[in-house]
Amino acid sequence: MLSKQPLPLMPSLPKSLPRICVALGFPSAEQLASAAEAEYKDGNTFLEFRFDHLQFPAAGVEALRAFKRKYPDSYLLATCRHRQASGKFAGDLQQQARLLKDSARAGATFVDLEIESAEQIKPELPALRELAPLCLSYHNFESTPALSPIL
Image (tube, rainbow, N blue to C red; front, side, top):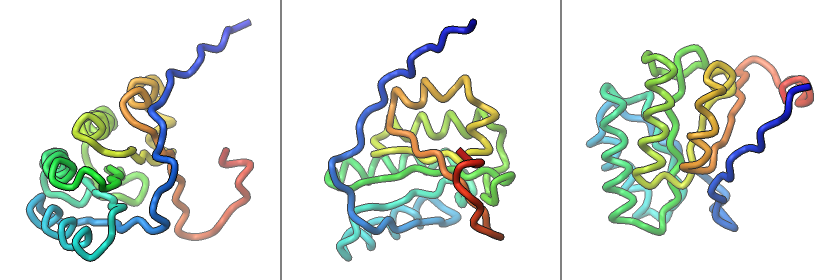
């Protein structure tokens, strides 16, 4: 019989989050930072930084770090959706996980990883969960299947 290892404690999410998260996907880190600042100044404090839209996804980590330093009361979700899950990230799964870990270290409130990638890099998830709350997301652009088989 295999013993189950307890999951590492994950940092907790804030008690309450704004109800709307504004997704930001731009080809350059400068455009991403500029759009994030405009949204913040318009009253939107819950922002999704889509690294997979960036020509150089790693540049998004520095943009996130600088934004969080300037606006510490913001809630930032870091995402780097892989091509296999209808995103634009073409790197390998270890690079994707590294970008999310780096974004957590840079101040992301939490990180989002699509379930397809999570299933393939399961051994890396505990280390990611130690850095930031992890949201596993499922996307189906054709139908809304029953939840129990997905879980």
